[in-house]
Amino acid sequence: MTVFIAGGEITVNEVSEVIKSVQTKNVLIDFRNAVLGSFRPDDIDQLSKLTLQNPEIRLGGKTAIVAPNDIAFEVARIFKNLTVDAPRKLKVFRMMVKATEWLGIEDVNNGIY
Image 1: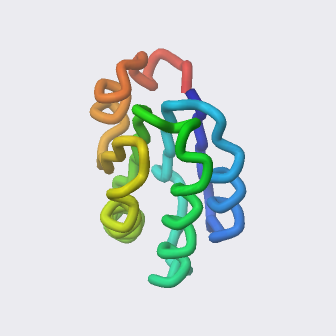
Image 2: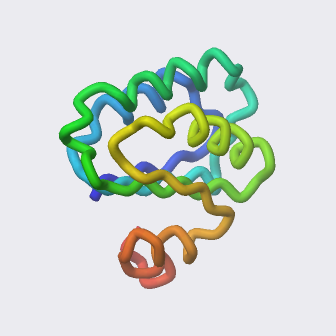
């Protein structure tokens, strides 16, 4: 499992590097403390195209994005809609506990994440 915990202002380049570096089936992206206000629609489109590279690595995997604030949630939702052809399932959650349940991992309150 790959876990990406974002804090503060997040750039497109940072998210791009995370997408490129993923080598696991399952991914948890935590945007609870992140600011995504500078993302434009073409940035989200660019990121969505990266997910289609090396599809065999993610085949059958899951990606959970935790985005409790409205802007991050909307960015993640648009990203999800642009990546429906990716080889993994993706869900967007407002609550970490729901994301970890879906991924089948321990709740974040036990200190793992």
